[in-house]
Structure formats: C-alpha cells, structure tokens
Length: 93
Image 1 (cartoon, one colour):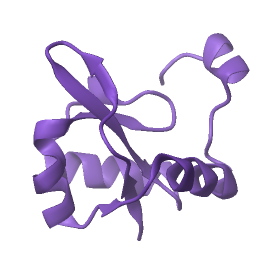
Image 2: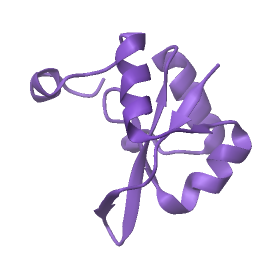
Image 3: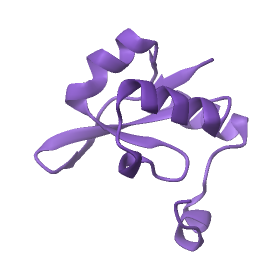
C-alpha cells in the first residue's frame, strides 16, 4: 500500500492545499481517507484535496511525502490519473 502526499501549494479558504493519492487503487485511497477522517467531499475524481494542517497526521498514518512531479508520475503510472479533458466531462461518483 502506498498513499502519496505532495506539498501543499494551492491557496484557498484561508489555508494551503495539497493532494493525497494512491498509486494502487481508488479503494486503497478511500480506505486511507476514511481512516484519516477526511470528508468525502474532499475527493476529486483521482485525489483528495488536503489542507496543510492535516499533513502531520496523514504522515503518521503512513502517507509518504513526495514531490509533485513524483506524485503525478506515479498516479499516471497506476492508470488512475484523470486528465483535464476527463475532468470536464466526468462527475464525482
């Protein structure tokens, strides 16, 4: 099981956000998110948006910090990456 966490770089709602992904399966990602107490509304088709203040707890639960490029590379390699085009045409299940 590998759940990956990139550096928080995206400002919004008075904090900075990053991404939590799995390089194995969405089931693994959702299970980790449930264990971490992340709200389902923070899921965005192939990742969870995570506020910077949750990072320490996620790492303690086993998330591995990686650079953004590594996160994207591994997400693409897993076949789970949702492209910008797919994002425009798909909705969250």
